[in-house]
Image (cartoon, rainbow, N blue to C red; front, side):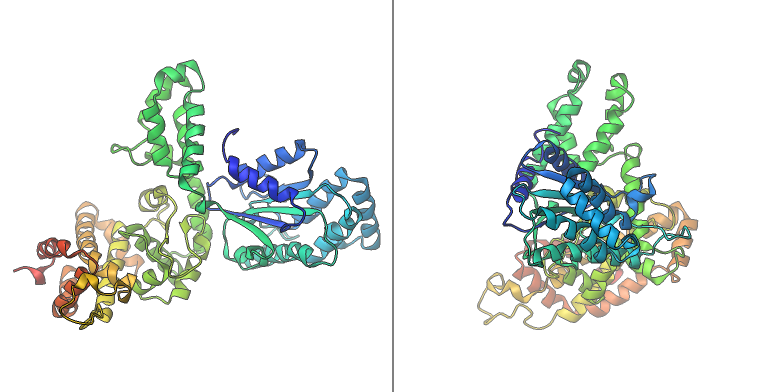
Length: 529
């Protein structure tokens, strides 16, 4: 849409025309952040810009009905064929390579890059006009074997990695070619682990790091254009309606598009009725009826992440436990802190989340405190609308974080936990750095998760005892009963009460201590006076 993503498009255009800069631009972003729209716009602009040659583009899509469009092995041959239509010199050089090696299409992808792109492009090494190739949604590529069965993930990831490394090799060759590659993808591990993620070889833009005010301004422009598209609609909607959708979208283009498609899909006459049913009663979430497109996207992502037909596998249980904890967390955490709370090695937790970069922001640094779901609608889907084998019980996250908080306090609360130099010094003046994030979280939020778990389990038991039995059998154990929490709290928390107060005081939250203890006294038997 004209007037949106202006600065990003300018930056990419400048990168294309700078023949001395990196030859690869990696545009990374989670699902629904607008990567494909940007890639398409660049193709349109390059096609009409006499100062750029659009060598070719390949838009991968797992949902397309065209098998070749999702086959990773078609990317390089397609780009070569399209470039041959742009340049007679390239076409002649490509023909020479095919004459020498007519079986190149059956060879490894790095050989294809060399013989179908690099060597023919040498004929254009003196060109002063940059040649740009666009590869969109590379993470969505797969492929099929000759027998009809799909390539497995390992083989697909290997081909993608080899292709990217071969493209990076352009920068390492002895001849500097006027060639640029714009690659977009989700920040999946097999892509991040290539040299494409190295700033020495690539210009990198991660869309989730773009200033949120800039994103909201673009979404606002898009929503305004759609809601006020006709005189009839302009009479029905107000700026307040626009503001509401901007807030609900929360920086995710696909949410805005989904909401408007739902509200306006049946024509102007029903627009206000559909708009009123678009949101939940409190106005901060999309209603169930408006989430079909989002749910389809989330289902693909979670199914791909789980990769488990048997719901009893430990892998799936562990993955959903991690997701449940993140959805129930009361503040953003780091990989290290969440790993501590779930009693899991940080490397193992990161490995479990490698397929969830589309829906969670997983920071590169384990101590970066920005681990979080990208949008609230993902949690709504898993907690309420997902298929039975993927739906997460509302109590699971609270239980995991309640038990984890008690474990962290057991391990971390001790005499002089704040490392104060003297008892005459106020706790608030002590080094806050001495208190790990996991311990901070545990001390400030443990009781809320215990209360949340006990309340939800009681509610589940009263509403649907059969559902509770399914949960029990799914995890192959009985849900924690209140007496078990009482025993743990009596053993862990009570003897460390003063150490807990020291941490709360050091964090400047002592005013919450009395309220938390009063809340605990109404929830946990062993703390009742």
